[in-house]
Image 1 (cartoon, rainbow, N blue to C red):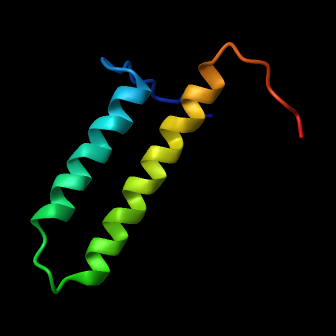
Image 2 (cartoon, rainbow, N blue to C red):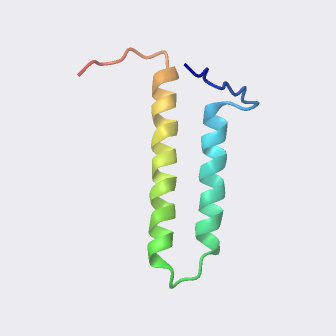
Amino acid sequence: MQRRRRIKHEISFEQRIAKLAQRVREEADRLPPGDKEKREALLKKIGQAEIALSICAWLNSAEPRSSA
């Protein structure tokens, strides 16, 4: 069986996701107005990154979690 390659990240997951969202947002801003499909795909990616950040914040919070 192959061993899994482990990567030691220098910055946290939250920082990497925030950086990704910022980079994608800048890319979306640079697109020409006629490239609607690409812009929508980039905006979807930004939304996914923001949801991931919200989930991380929720999981790391000290508040009690509801199971329902």
